[in-house]
Length: 174
Image 1: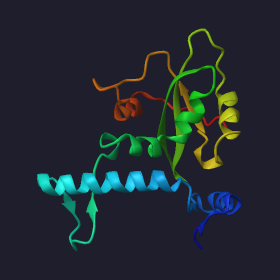
Image 2 (image 1 turned 135 degrees about the horizontal axis):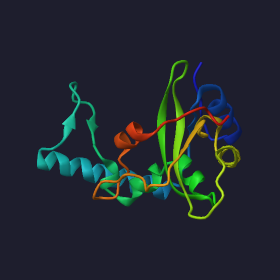
Image 3 (image 1 turned 60 degrees about the vertical axis):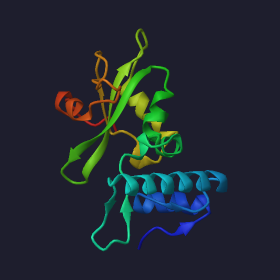
Image 4 (image 1 turned 180 degrees about the vertical axis):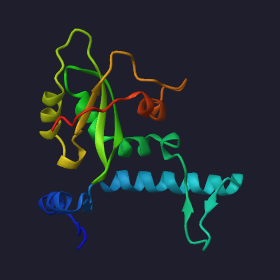
């Protein structure tokens, strides 16, 4: 059985709990959908004109890469809910969310946190804080605390491969 396309948030939450994903119709207002669709078509046409397009073998679909660099409408849709929820905590100065390898599940959610200077930070409290705001599968089971700023490239993007190498996950917080 799989999730069902629905406009009912209760059904969406039930599918999320059962399947780990849900399919919600009408989540974005029609004007945002139209804006996003128009920008996507514009970007795809530009890539075709530039000769930088990627069309799958059967020719029926074109893949547009790095959407976050191609318009604010894509950034607005793609902002990571887990990062946003954790950043609401007053003791969190910086955070990155990573997949933590897990023998049984394949991966679990981990958060690398740089606490706010002078704030009291408790990883279990942060997990509880996140649990109030997120679906269970998005709540970090592992929290690693560091005092150094998160590693970033010159453009400001967090260097997740570097962070994975530097992080010792320890035991799950829940």
